[in-house]
Length: 146
Length: 458
Image 1: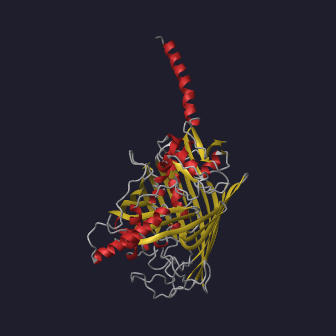
Image 2: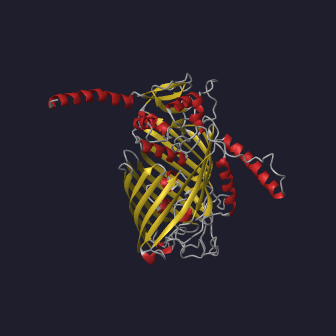
Image 3: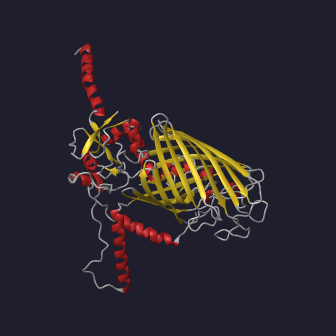
């Protein structure tokens, strides 16, 4: 194989893999809230406030309840942290600190995307991240990110 | 903030009993779900842990395993008198636990240990020493819009003495540092009752007794706790309210208001019972947050310090706690504090600056003005954060009636300064290690310390 052919293969592989990585960062996870929550879209700034105790109640009246997988290595946690411009570890530390300050209620510790779907379906104030392939219950809906 | 060692054991016992109970399988919110449909099986998994923010162990069961019941065994031998007492206690504990489980109580633990290298006999009898000074339980509970939190702290006192000498206290004291019951009306109004940190500046109610959250090994002196050389009233027992208003153009605005007991006669304590002062403490803080992670705030506080005759001794029978400088008695003193703070905590930057003016006006005397402030700066590089903090306090030329008692760190001091340089390493969210060098100037003398502190929170 010549050098030119090798470079061509590398370029082709890069083109194929590149968009796929991008999709995994932005298109494979979604934010879920309860169906009773009329909010359909949320800005990055508003999400940050909801996830770190700045906003304590949704407009409809339910108390904000974050659900999070408490591991910086969980892709759902990484996705949430990326949305609000924090490192996953920083997000978890900040949440822990806000709870300690009394500024936000304890997050519900999740173990998987399915847990998020269940939480969003059962808690009127819930907000959490799940993988796009997760079956969303009728009592929850996806939040668009502005 | 005087320590109480006896009742603490009973409270701790009850808390440990509560802690031993399995967490309830609830949805983390007492509000009814919008649909009658039962959540899928995963719902239990998702919400039953009720655990602190730490990763669940691999392979751990989704629902906590039941712990042995404390209910008396029907097949147990006939109870003795001691056994009856034990059974009654078990039943009482069961009732307490049932209530606690219904409210979804979670208890976290915080603490720290350290090693100190001091500059010889000027500040400490030993050059190197180790400390395990603090251990605390942090229970929280939520039920709908009501939430509860408390901090139960066991601590070896660490206030510095005259001339900057380090405390050689060895015994743990026990204290309830926070005890708050909060009701959330909406984003504009949240009401709090109990004992909490006064909403003054940024540091005081952002960092509490868990050292893991602080960038440095200790609080700035001006906002330190009452029994640890602090100048402001760190704790207040009373009521508080806060709320946040969002605007589309100017960012967010927040207010915090406290009303509660004033200082007790011994200003190193907190007035947790009937107030000894004739007036209440009022405190108002206003904040503007024009963009993410930036805060500009101001606050004003009015309080009163009761008169203290010179012959009142310290709790341990030590030197008199409150004779005025140059006078036999300390008269009732009016206290006014004004402050401003600027904070930015984003993009790995940690920046906190606060400045205060404190006015003490003894009855029949003139104003005594103390100025002080500090600036704390750090920059996180992955898990490591190098930092710096500088602090300066200027006492009145004529001395301060309240802060400069003969046994105080600040006795005979006009200028006080503290410089700290260090590095903080937080490999996992539950552990922080800090290595710090400190140089403080008090009473006309410089002192140097180096400290390694390991703080944890689980």
